[in-house]
Image 1 (cartoon, one colour):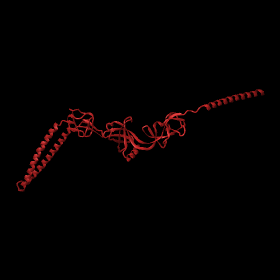
Image 2 (cartoon, rainbow, N blue to C red):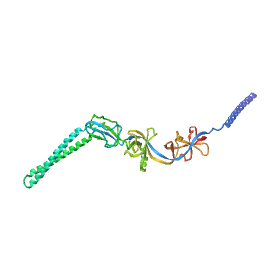
Image 3 (cartoon, one colour):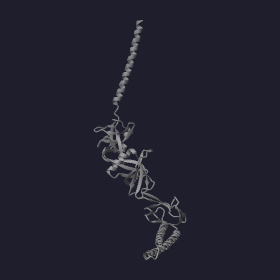
Length: 377
């Protein structure tokens, strides 16, 4: 009974020894395999040095070009439009004749009014001479005081009649002048609304044409009320520059200056309207055109800047990879980005320093501490 028990013990010890030997052999082979594996190769990257640069701070907004003046030319008298003396799209000057209305009726009325004036002036002149004679006769008792007073009243009555006639003549002269329509401003005439031969009235709302004064052009845009402080600080320092870009923000159309702020904030949108003036815009700005307005609120003096493509975006914010010096590794550094100008972005809060190298290409394959090889500067 004792020998079989010992045999089982020896058999179990043998199995355990075989297992231990197998484990030891596997560990040995695995260790040798890792010991012979070379380190991962350095990733090729492009890097550029951090520079100091003045960075303008802009407030961007979508704006609308508005003309300095927009005038709808409406006839001030009723009559037949006999001539239109402008071409559509023509540049006109203030006072230039642009249309004519048949004025024959007004000329006839003016002739009648002048005739009445001349008639009443003659009556007044005769009454004045009679009054002078009665004043002499009253001295010698050849007339009565009543006759003298009646003549004086007649003179005053005729003076009133003459004054009314003069007013009627002046009114008809004004009405006659309305038959020759002139441009009230320097500007560009739009499309013709009425053709010659039509009867035009003062009740018309469409008018004969619309004239817009294009120079200087203005742009109206709305900015958030949170930017009011920055705008007021900029205005206190002097002229505030405003740039107008096209819809795609690629081409600069005109450069102008801030003209005025509205006097209240729109509570429904939380914005305030701003108007900028562009003195030398030429034909680059067109009324009711949509433009991208950029108001220069400040300038960051000698601020660190890096190429925009060097900045990476993650769940914890913006970051970039800085090449360690000395060494061939990179460190991941979280940064706070500021305004961008062109293809460079400002880095705020001393996120990087002048002269440090940041990775601009190949960052998608890197982690904090990755080995790199700078192949392009």
